[in-house]
Image (cartoon, rainbow, N blue to C red):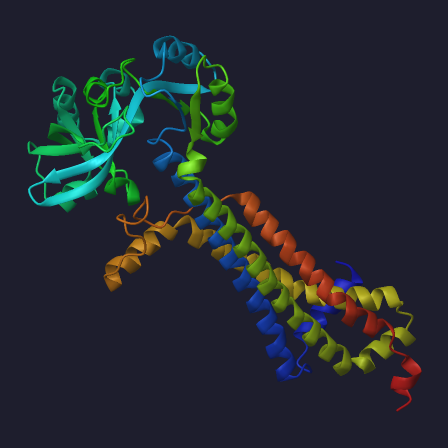
Length: 410
């Protein structure tokens, strides 16, 4: 152990240190530890939301969409679907028709966005896992079948097997005309979470094509990628290969605000809690300045015995670093332990106080997610230690400038 570290440890253990200096020193250690713990927990929560966004929401909604400008639909979509499916980045391609209309059951009505899909092709998608298997099998064999989001079913007080009336705007005319009306049978319920449950519905592709007069059989193609975060670039690349005018869209246009909100909160949290750690480190400055004033006689005696300015500076740098290191280590350990068990802890608080942190009716998940990345832990520890070192420089320079003659002469 170096002489500077031995002196720093002895200064910290000395009973000569005043109670107020000890309090300031302890508060700085506690503040740094608390800042590190909260920063690690909050970053883990943001990581958890990003993981759930990728695995929950983006697993079920299309990552990219190409749909024809022409009301008759997308020409030769079967060939394009085969070509796009052979792309290594593409996981699945399926034809679809979007139909926005009004659903009625008795006097109740609800705006709904129906997607007409090919049941055989959709059978290979992850979407099916959100629908009871028996209900999906019934939908496959009934061309007039309908699957609706849970919130729509609750809003209209529907039950499986009910007949519902769907009013669709008449296409292919600029004149005001009465809507097309089709009758469909509710065969299944889908639960995606959040707002998606309040307007999502599925019907058969052939039924949608007939009702909306899409003569080609499909209005466009929905594309799922292995990595949803390439959707914006890859969808445009595929769209330029179409031989007709088409609109191009991807999930960043429809659900991208969720991802942007997560990144914004992550950035704000990082800045805010780093400043909290910095404020805690300022207490190290205060405690070390007071320690230097209290130990002027000891510093003067060390200098008369040949101690260099570098040794004096190193002693107080080490003293401040020890406070910071204790806070960083214990704060990081607490942050890691809480982050790894945060979901269970949140569930426990919900059960204990009978409240819900995240409502499944509003958000796409109904629990508090957490995913610990040790890179975040290491970065937090490094930043806290660097701030602790910076906080020791001024008191250490002040200690090195003490003149033994002025101190011992009194």
